[in-house]
Amino acid sequence: MNDSLSTERALSALAARRRSLYLRVHCWAALIATPFLLLATLTGLLYVFVPQIEARLYEGLDRVAPRGVMLPLDRSVAAAQGAVPHGLALRSVLPPFAPGDSVKVLFEPARGHEAAGHHHGAPPASAQAARPLTVFVDPYSGRVLGVQNTGERFSDWSKSLHSRLLQGDGWRWMIELGASWLLVMLLTGVYLWWPQPGGSGLPRAGKTGRAAWRQWHAFAGVALGLLSLVMVVTGITWSQYAGEQVRRLRDAAGQASPRAPSHLHSRPAPGTRQLDWEGAWAHARGIAPPIAMSLSPPRGADGVWRAAGADRTQPTRRFDLAFDAYDGRVLYRAGWEDQTAFGKATAVGIPFHRGEFGLWNQALLFLFGLGVLFSLVSGWVMFYKRKRSGRLGLPALLPGALRAASPLAWLGALALCALMPLLAVSAAVVLMLEWLVLQRARPA
Image 1 (spheres, one colour):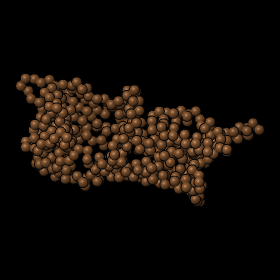
Image 2 (cartoon, rainbow, N blue to C red; image 1 turned 30 degrees about the vertical axis):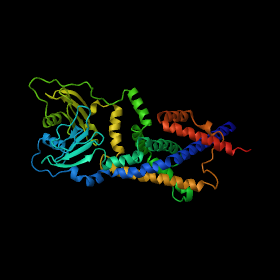
Image 3 (cartoon, rainbow, N blue to C red; image 1 turned 120 degrees about the vertical axis):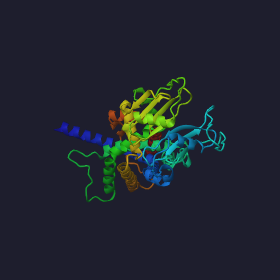
Image 4 (cartoon, rainbow, N blue to C red; image 1 turned 45 degrees about the vertical axis):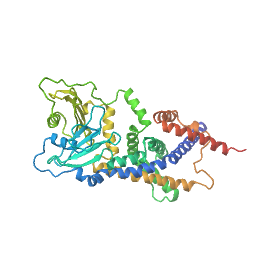
């Protein structure tokens, strides 16, 4: 009887020490991540509405009134070439998929011998002034609807705002740091919320003050847990430092997406001509799934036509295609069935993260953003209700708390730090601060 009671007390003391450690880590994660998560959430809420905003901003460029039969694609391409300055080379064309779509022709600064020689009176541009451009053409009349700097649409602006606050790539660390600690907040939060045997994790009526804030904070965090995990994991895949680690693991596991070989060549035959734009488009449509596509022309006499899916909202119709520029013989083809498990996961996860699957996706992300804001606000309300004057406000760390963590928890922490370098660096700083706090707390 006494042995049983002693064991029960020891387990209870261990659980208390472990809980104090995870609560302390949870609060440190919140202190570090909150400013970055606040920025990411507010800018992400704006990004959710990109489709509706761009539909209004660029209706005159993206959309046309269907009438009659479309002109051959070559006419639209020629019109686009006449609208851009010298010094730019044609890189790809997005033909219309729906009857009301415009033709989008993408140009980039020419490389060496690629001087754009088809510009029929277009104004010259110096190498310094040459910038990537997208030309929009009406496929029914061949009229140029407008020219836009590539990468300067509202979606590009809002994406830059969300990922690096309109600064260079050197600022991408901020959102990555916030996402890293959000994952720590999520894992420790689930542990702290997990109900005791016979208990319930649901909010209970009648609680007031800090207790009410705590139960709703915990419930909201866990309710959003799966979606938070999806958002963090998909965001990390294209982050700066953790993303590089993910890509290394992907390549080591043989999960890189298939790519067309760089040595593909066409076989010119005497008296034959390369397929024109209309012919190449028709040929690609006969092979590829029914989806909007991007066409890239051959580079040189032995170059190949390339086509790829251009609609991320239909990942299962994703494809890459290369075919002979003269006879259309398929040289390379990869579809959804050829993608690796990692490639399929990112093909679905990244568009979901961006809210590109339609209104249901946008609504879900909007509610998620509101939930994250509530979690942040409620967490800080509890922090200030706990904080005493002159104190840091962190929850007490019981003696022996560090030794109370399970081996699995330590292994998980090491794995996360190895995967996310910014988490490792910031965690080292936290440990230094904890040491200073403990030194200050010791009696003289």
